[in-house]
Amino acid sequence: MIPVLICALVSLSVAQSSLNSLYPNLEHSRTIYVLENGPQLSVVADLSKVVSRRGGNATLPCKIHRDQSLPPNPKMRIKWTKLTSDYLKEVNVFVAMGYHKKSYGRFHGRVYLEGSSPMDASLVITEITLEDYGKYKCEIIDGLEDETVVVSLDLEGVVFPYFPRLGRYNLNFYNAERACQDQDAVVASFDQLYDAWRDGMDWCNAGWLNDGSVQYPIRKSREPCGGKNTRPGIRNYGLRDKDKNHYDVFCFTSYFKGRFYYLIHPSKLTYDEAVNACQQDGAQIAKVGQMFAAWKLLGYDRCDVGWLADGSVRSPISRPRRRCSHSGAAVSFYGFPDKKHKLYGVYCFKGQN
Image 1 (tube, rainbow, N blue to C red):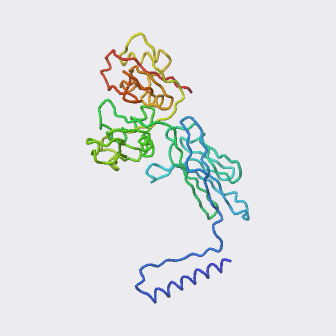
Image 2: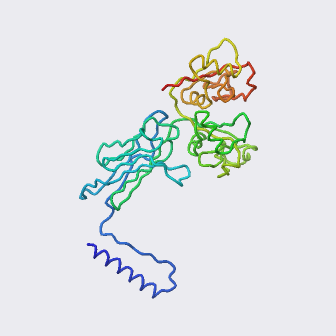
Image 3: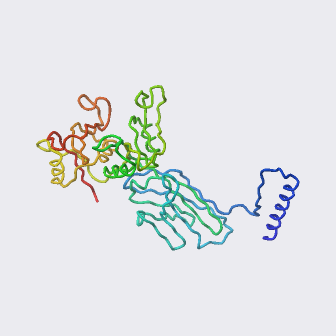
């Protein structure tokens, strides 16, 4: 059959040459490749998005459809990669070829193929972390054929705006990443911020997102926030210089394994006393992300203002009432007071291994 295919290609090339000679001003030309048979391999996913949570498991679907008349190919390769937020590079996750299997980097020991059938290339991810959120590509290489499908892993969680004790607009992108990590979170994606906006988030200060852009969500248009005549939505400053430009940051966190609680103590505490009090209770002073997760995902509600690890004082209100965030459910923020002030309680966190 190969000579027939070559003849077909030669005939098309000759025909193309004839056209070019007859029509010298023809601007566009193309070569048409004729295949006797159509594609013999395809890859599909029955879900384009899978939702899980931190600490949980998820199965990213990927099924192989292969011409049954073909003999088995022991060298067929299954490769899973994670796409980065800017799509410029991919991170290796898992590769399998026959009995040879390998997981990479922070995915090592946490991923494997579901393998419900020889044509099942679905990837199971265990002990999911915040960094696992994103898009994954399943690539099947079968001889000369190569097919892919992309599946998103979404996490149940909460987005919160953050700035440090230094004040607003003091974080370049890399400091913003560290700030979120210090608060048990990661820099949020645009999709996560958009979901938070749809859920009612309204915040006038611009913050970094994980793709290097700077944006902020507005529900009620007003003059200091893009103008009162503009439509509600996500205000976008575009991509910014990650080193030179300084903004706040939007962080994202999810469920945690542990206990978040307000420590009952006979007296108010300075910051250092608050840290020691949690340690004496077998815990650590809680982080901002842990308070937001407890408030949003677990419905934690307490009026008491308490110290957190970053030196801020806050209170999580799920049931607004008089003298207790009457304006709405929120994590109330009271600033970064002098750490020597003996005016507040403390929120603690006991993790579970």
